[in-house]
Length: 201
Image 1 (cartoon, one colour):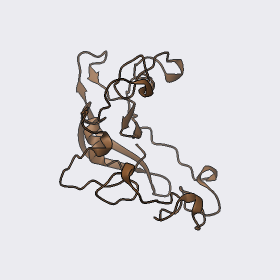
Image 2 (cartoon, one colour):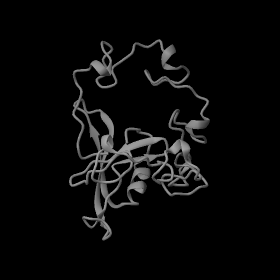
Image 3 (cartoon, rainbow, N blue to C red):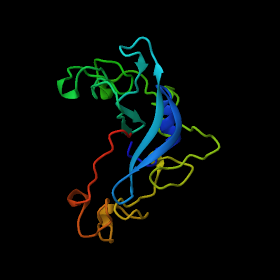
Image 4 (tube, rainbow, N blue to C red):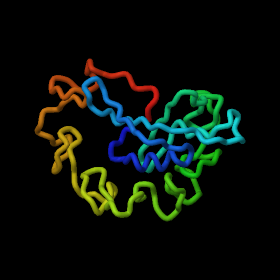
């Protein structure tokens, strides 16, 4: 889950549907000490006698609202990122699985089922509107203000310099590498690319 606006509480709640989440979350940093957006959670697999190995495994690829997450851990069974089945990869998959209802045979855009929250399966709201802590006001992931979400945000924000009031195309600031901060090259040309941690989500 690379979106820093998806809270640790939200990810813990999602993981809690499959595993027991233990205390302690580690933010994965690159060679410069900058957070990559990855997080590492300590979990204990729950017993599930209906599976081949006797444990409930969380999905390797998942969505929380519009944000996709990828889960990697030691001993993880091979699973297809298209249909979620074990035993084959996506390049050999012949199934279509809907990310909305989870059923095989159609894709999300053709789904006839009512849309549901990815966190609690409710039909009354979507994951972007879900509040784990009702005392904390809803905050927009685009501008950071409270009282609305990103879908209703009227504030424009530059993805290059991070300032409000203009978009990247109109930015007057020099473009910078998002990995090291240099204005002499872009991230795609950066020599400080880091190798991803294989045990984080």
